[in-house]
Amino acid sequence: MGYSSFLVPHRQGRSTVTTKALSTIDVVSQVLAEYAERRVFHGFSRARTTGDTASFQIAWHRGRVFELTFDAKTCTLRLPEVLTNVPAGAAMHADLKAFIRSRQSAELPEHRRIDRQKVQIRTYNRNDDILLVMKANDGDGEYAARKLVHLVNEIYLIFLADGNYFDYLVETFDLDPDHM
Image 1 (tube, helix red, strand yellow):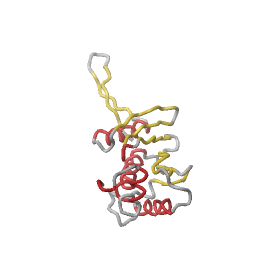
Image 2: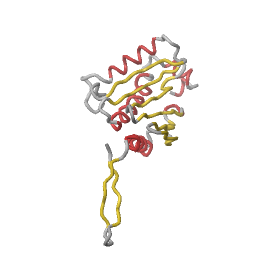
Image 3: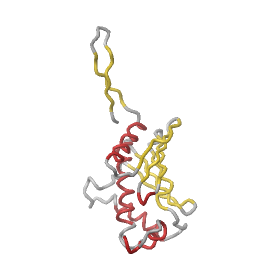
Image 4: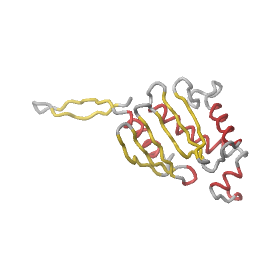
């Protein structure tokens, strides 16, 4: 969990530094804000917080705005439309699941690997949209948020761009195939 330091006035005029543990929502928000500052995202805002749930708007791949929700009680991140226009039962969903499993392989370097012991990853097809859910098993929202960002980047930059889904990219994002 992250920490925030601030000055507290002391009775005799001196200030003391106090460290306060940040909430898991604040930690996840800070992680996402760091990616926005590094221009991984085209835009970012913390939309609303209700109880233990926070919502974030992220302008990201191909100009899409993603709505990410984080439930601090279960330490779960949900990205409802990581991929759109994927018919139920399509091979693309099965291929995506296999790709995600490959990101958990011990053969990947540790900094690129998603630790199965630390997070559970699930995908669901809801109305032809792929929903991505990542749950931190140990309550480490920072780890889960960082790995979610890395995974979504790899979905767009590796999984979709590897050639098998070129037509999907062109059709879904209205791209000019001659300028990709």
